[in-house]
Amino acid sequence: MGYNKDMRSYAGTMLETVIRNDHIPDERYRELDVKRGLRDLDGRGVITGLTNISDVISFKEENGERIPIDGELWYRGYNVRNLVKKYTETGFGYENLAYLLLFGEMASPEQAKEFVSLLEGSRDLPTNFTRDVIMKAPTQDIMSSMTRSILTLASYDKRALETDLQNVIRQCLNLIAVFPMLAIYAYHAYNHYENLESMYIHRPEEGRSTAEQILMMLRPDKSCTEVEARVLDAALMLHMEHGGGNNSTFTTRVVTSSGSDTYATIAAAMSSLKGPRHGGANIKVIQMMQDIREHVKDWNDDDEIREYLNRMLMGAVFDHKGLIYGMGHAVYSVSDPRERIFKSFVERLAVAKGREDDLMLYNKIETLAPEVIAARRRIYKGVSPNVDFYSGFVYEMLDIPRELYTPIFAIARIAGWSAHRLEEIVAMGKIIRPAYVSVMKHLE
Image 1 (tube, one colour):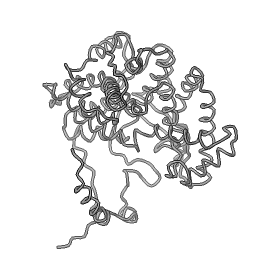
Image 2: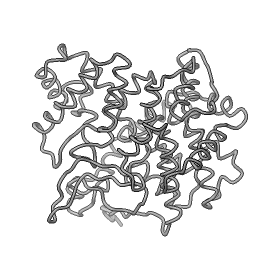
Image 3: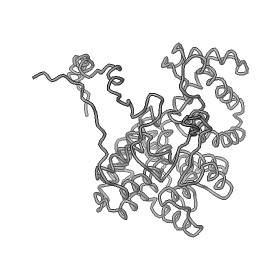
Image 4: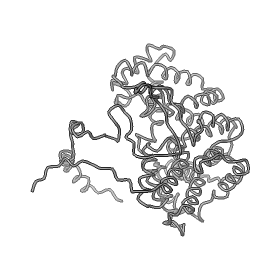
């Protein structure tokens, strides 16, 4: 699509008209008791469905009162903390947890071996797909490139539009298998054509975990250490599912409920995840931390750090949005269990990479930011670091380019999306169709 100056000029002249006619005052939402963002005033999500896939816990009920507790995340009845511990000790976990999410039970050793073999055998794109689709229109927006690839893959599937359960399972498994290739190859195409760097396309290798495949395909020498792969594997496990109410998973269920096909559904979920309010938070944390490094002279001076965070919260520094990124969560209050679990992996990688000073600064921000936020703002619940506070730091230490931060999230979350698509099909009763209250005036 070309750049049309007349169209831009016309859009500019209509800007105020759109704002004037589309603005709805905040008090109208309160008067009509409409839940903005499908959330109550105290931050609780409006219940829109049931799921047996995962559970996100942040409060307990005592005598009719909701009391904040340390957050918990459960996959199919298993505490994620225990799952990550188990597979960190016995092998790579992403594949095992994908099986658990999809099929609702733990895989036996034989089933796990068969499942991994099936994914390995499916890590293949149609003939010339990389050249004709991924490399055809290189872009810095890797999420859009992946979405285009997902929709194009439908053209190669003779049963693309069929939504019987067996066919959808097949399609979901195929997408889980090729997602790392769609992301990494898209980055290499962009890096070559836009940044004028060397091009290399490594094919997946048998016997490697998804985490190893990502690092191997990304790096020129195809190398990665065990600690690097295990830390990335932990990140994938912690990002692969987070309840049915997060924006991209809810999108998956909404589109599935309409009877749409798998490729369109996952493309819609991708479009949701790429939004900066959802999947791009870790990039903002990295940018914020870089800004802090540049403006805080003494990283050991808590008072200087606290003062800069105050100025950030006032909108006087960094991006002037008045936010401290990586702090707080829509659900968790006392703690984000994913951050608690992930932190030990972050520390391990920081030591291996010689980044202890940066880790110390992150630790200080983790301690001081909640204090600054609580002192300056009236909040209905506690504030604690979320998993995005550290994930960008890990990707940075792994030399993963920022263009791939959100795509890595997608590589993990495709397993959760697929599980919710299957559950929605099995339990499907009605199309998801929430109501909106019209506040327009009837003119004639």
